[in-house]
Amino acid sequence: MWIGIGLLAAIVGGLAYWLLITTEGTYLGPRVVTRLYDWFAGRYDAVKNMHCVNESIYLGIPLAEALPPVESSPIVLDVATGTGRVPLALLRQWDHGGMVIGIDRSLPMMAVARKSLADYPEESAFIQQDAEALGFADASVDGVTCLEALEFMQHPQQVLREMLRVLKPGGLLLVSNRVGSEARFFPRRIHGRGQLERHLRALGLQDIRTDRWQVDYDLVWARKRLDEEQTASPPQAAAPRKEWRKDEE
Image (cartoon, rainbow, N blue to C red):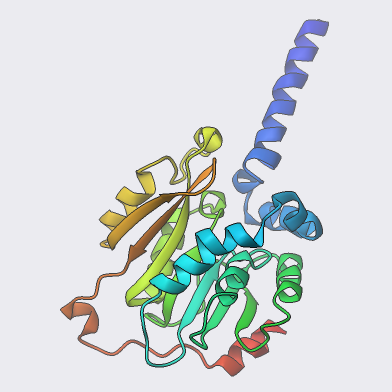
């Protein structure tokens, strides 16, 4: 009997670990994921132990160089921005006078992001928003990024479609791809080396390139096609910056 109880406890404990730790609540719904990040916000950066030099080498500098040249101030959207690692890495290198907008479901995480980017009040904004229904006009941003988050989305295909919808033709997409040993614990998600690249190719993106980044992640770069159909009519303008600031409060 005690062996059976011990075995049951091990199964329950393993299931709880998979649901709450390994997959960070994603199979329990977006509210659970958001609550976990709310609780963890104050310790997130310390646990991740990110170094500004590495962030510049792998994110900030390549992003600044890869973003398409535009006449007016470029706009970059960071989906699932968390504590603002991408906006901070980019703005430390960027001299285009543009703006980085971070969206996330967790208000405590974005509160940490605002403190981290206190030196960039005019170049950054943070909005609580669902990645599956982005509140931006079609073809309104010059670049879209989403790091260490896609596998935690309930419907990653829908998130990708939304990111492509708001991206201008010729715009840059940067998404991380889960490739480590724990990737197999994310059924029905886009993961595994080559899987995300094939999915982006099927969506019509071009110039797809993969960089090895971390043990658990690759960085996948791509561009939205610039063709006659996409340029036949001018893209819709992004929402005024004033509205972003209003929503941010």
